[in-house]
Image 1 (cartoon, rainbow, N blue to C red):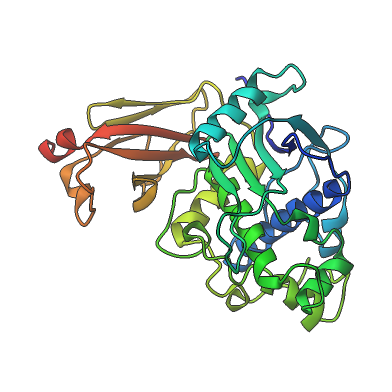
Image 2 (tube, helix red, strand yellow):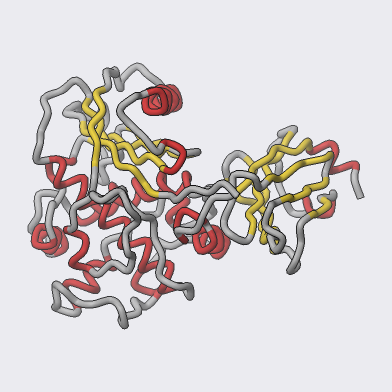
Length: 352
């Protein structure tokens, strides 16, 4: 069986503007923050602690469980120069162009083993101001999460700086930094195969993102508090949460479990029937999701030992297809491999 390990590779995008080296510390700290947040929210809502690995200095997987003090730990980042006019180019076109540039670059190895988190800072102000300082560009999916912002110079770069933000004494407000971090995690979670949701992080509700760190760093008054035996109450996350369906995907996703991607596993769609094959004799499908225009509209847990499933019109009950001709079907197996296929709605309506 061919298998590979997985990690998130962080790339800092230079946008033909003056390079500010100190932004490296700010972006690294922000990435560690979302890595830690993901670990704690998964644990708080009933699963084992797990999060994504970053490209480590030794090029090996990290030993995750992160402590709050670990958000200052170093990891590998890369720099990629990129020329773009953010005022005239559509977000999707930028995403595709950056993805092509990274995949075709000779400067990167292990391209099949990583998800890309690309972070860019621009000095250009937004045409219209907003209190939360929305990113200039944010797009995620497939293997790339792209995030460009113009307030990174004001981001914290240490736990001490973060405490200042939480106390309202930082260079950026708690609400603004929460929004930037949440937007970055939102796009990264698209690469972990989360669709949009009716509420929470995948519906761009990031208001309570930093409440977790306020709970750990201020209310507990302990900078280096160990989270090994500390369960953050779910209410601390407020409305900045994942849905049950989203947590199910994250909990089982191979990118968060540091298991192995089976390159020979395959899902075949024959009409409205899903057939799964794998060189692992015990392999099975775990669940199916229906997506309409990027929104998860139905989640179906499958019976134990299932490796084939027939879709029918009954599964469309309660789903608004918005006049579309196809619906996206997402399937996950027992080790977290994800397969996506489009299925013709007419065939579904005509099947039993």
